[in-house]
Image (cartoon, rainbow, N blue to C red; front, side, top):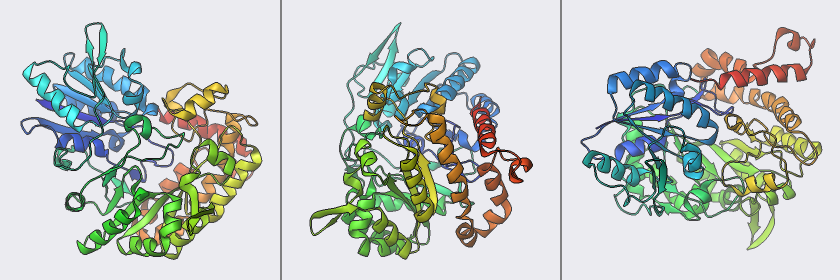
Length: 495
């Protein structure tokens, strides 16, 4: 069968397509795990975010798919619905399959969207078995992790247990299935690799526990290194390790760094997400090893510097420094110091706008980011389906916006007990723009071509909403902010 797999064009504010266009690793993994007789095409629509309708039209005409799959996050749900309508209009009898975080955690939302099948949680084995059943015309009731339409009703099969990743049942991704080009991270071709899946923490803002429970499973290093080589051979010069929490097992992460060096793969740039506690408690040896292995950017899950907010976010444990077996305080500054001493850049992940936040607590976090992080990734708490945070906010009556297309992390959709949502967003927006400018000299040293030829586009994106009048101080920042929000709303109209 001909199969077309689509990821949505909607982007996060902190990952603008002008500078960052990441592939969807889940789709190439699906492509690598179907039976060989199927012809699979993967299209990451972020690469054509301003030509979505034309691109989907062309791909459907050229590929004539019998099955179209969509990977969807919550803020992409509206766009997904429009793409489903578009595909249905082009091929009325096509089978539509949806998967990803949003369909897995809110399957009821897709029952009236023209969808035939819904893959919950991990998809490789479920999708493989679904294609076999469609091809053979057999039943679906034996496929764990699958929901499907049966007449006017929906059937939800039992959940599929998370795969332990110990055998070869989940095969490597198929990057040859990609039919669009242009993946980039600051001018360098980028690809994604996973070395493990899962997390054992229960942060209130995170969907992982609801998706797969509290667990942590790993791939063998042989597989991981082969995957890195394949990404490199397909042109990647930067590798983003997309593990849910790779630093859960620090000794394994250290061994992975050593394996990357031994395999001669340390000349690539690596980007990783890490816990502050892991870096702070093991940084003396871990940070130099990471740098030798090629790690350049570390997304550090700081979350918040206020202990009360960390408790609400259920993130205190992973941000605590330990000395001689005793808790000795917040680990953030020590983790940042280890990374900076070893010439790595800190992408600071912070969350401002928890229920108890005041102007003073938000300003304290913004000032911390301004002083210590190299690139801010500051978000607002967002009530995604079935997260503990969602219940907390709803019980307190703090959710003020139900427009899911604005659930992108940087649009404040909840208020605090002390501040309206718009004010919270304004405070972050006003501070964050200038923080990003401070990283330009470092980016220029590492990627001079990108900064010289495309840096102006990054600045234009960062300061969109500004005008000559605002530059000259003839209109207020509030006016610029309102113009920015209007531009952002228009940007969300992809189809």
